[in-house]
Image 1 (tube, helix red, strand yellow):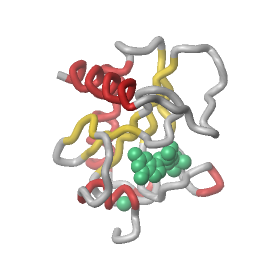
Image 2 (tube, helix red, strand yellow):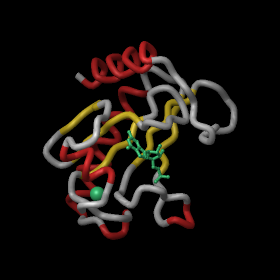
Image 3 (cartoon, protein in one colour):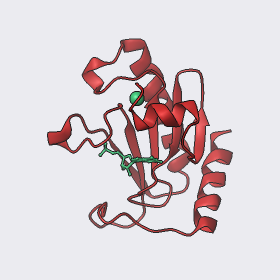
Length: 134
Ligand code: 5GP
Ligand code: ZN
């Protein structure tokens, strides 16, 4: 989809911090994170919402989400897996995505304004997650 920001990320037209990629899926850091290590997992094939996805693509997507979750579970006490469908449900980017949000503190998720982290912190958490995926 020409005007889809996540399709542009898949094409490499927009800079992003990659966590994991395979044939069908891509995982990268959210650029307005709710916590350090907040990762988005997306299918490479554009669908707007979960219900519109083909079963095989959804299977690949959830398996990638679990792979990332296994790594994130080793750097946090818990995590949220969140998936919004439709503007009314809080979906801003109209390309299916799972949010994987590491949680360490028992407080409300504080999404707006997004959390700010240093380049160093972002680099460190990216390397940690990527190492734990192996
Ligand atoms: P939604 O509300 O649609 O479930 O979440 C969309 C998410 O995509 C938001 O958390 C937002 O910060 C993230 N996002 C939007 N545009 C970009 C972008 O260009 N790059 C990255 N890395 N994340 C983005
Ligand atoms: Zn798209």
